[in-house]
Image (cartoon, rainbow, N blue to C red; front, side, top):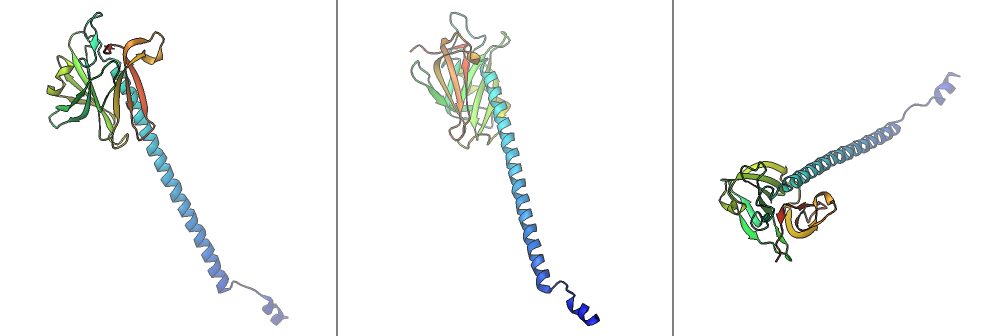
Length: 223
């Protein structure tokens, strides 16, 4: 009886143990790979959400600033005008001394003006004129300010960065483009379109980002 019972006893063989270890190892490696993928995707999603947030906030900030372009400049009979109180620049740069460089892109009644910067004058307190500018560079969008007598002085002013509306790299490396054109528009899409208004569009060819704003205080060219 003792020998029969001993003969029928079974245990773990070396092959069985090695097979179990192999299966366990493969399962652990698969779990670690899945965990790594989930972490990477979670980080990427967070980065994209953060980037989208900066883009939305920067776009809204730019629109709010542009709404004041031309305010308090001139009179009802002779309001602020394009190419004088609002100027589009191409190949614009800001040097270490705060001087803005670039070439003027004239706006006409039938021709758009596109560049990477736009300068405008306003008199928000009705006491002193202030110049502002949007500069798209290094994949970002800066808001610049300077005391001035007129927007036409843009190349001689000492500009200060008031805000990084969109941090560098927020859009494509080629940067955003700003385009001004005569348009029948009104702020916030309200009725009663002003046929002499200017519509400014900001966009990035490499992404889906695009935003337009109507500038009712600056008269568009008639020719």
